[in-house]
Image (cartoon, rainbow, N blue to C red):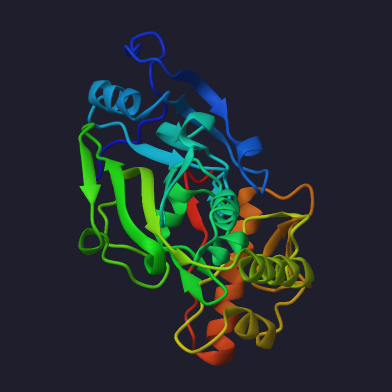
Length: 306
């Protein structure tokens, strides 16, 4: 039988020797792009990689751990997140350029890495201009956009496992596939190193501008959304399948399918995470009935249901 759900971490008895910030029963909705979701039993912001290792070594083995970047591509359910949530702050956002290589912390915004590459006249990173979120999440899901993905520029990464041991990961360790990797679920990325190729700053800038303009024109960027909702099936576009099933503008509670780009779900202001998830499942049902295609969620849904 499944072990009993851990509802909270005892703040009186759990006081690890760490340098990072600990918050018990911490609200998470403001950390999510959807601006929905419940509280974390424990929210921990480590100072550095060693601090994260020390925390994990002291955390009881039966307590689940969830990493959190800027809250994009993620739906936090209304019951909150069981166990410990690891939030990567500014101390994990460093970006270092060394020749044709760029090393970025897990908390570095993807778009910041693309700008750093532009400054260094390195091509291959332009697509990150169109990827919401941070490097940690991009590594985990092999994020991509506009015909490129993390696997194209990846060289190596560092990750910490649940027991606090650091692992150096090569390309063979990652097992890249479309919007996914085969890295153990428990691994928490702390940094990644990527390699580009020398390029002309003007050409790189033009490509980045094209990506920025394409996003602005086609995506509901100034709304409470989580990014692309469903993965593109082989040889097909998720948004076309959603549109073909008559789901453009479909609404449940305070959640709606974007009319600007119907692979985006929107919180119109008073949606709950349950509204958003139910809407996504209804879209999947209608697409299956209309086209026989089973859409897979690209947005990661985490936490307890209410």
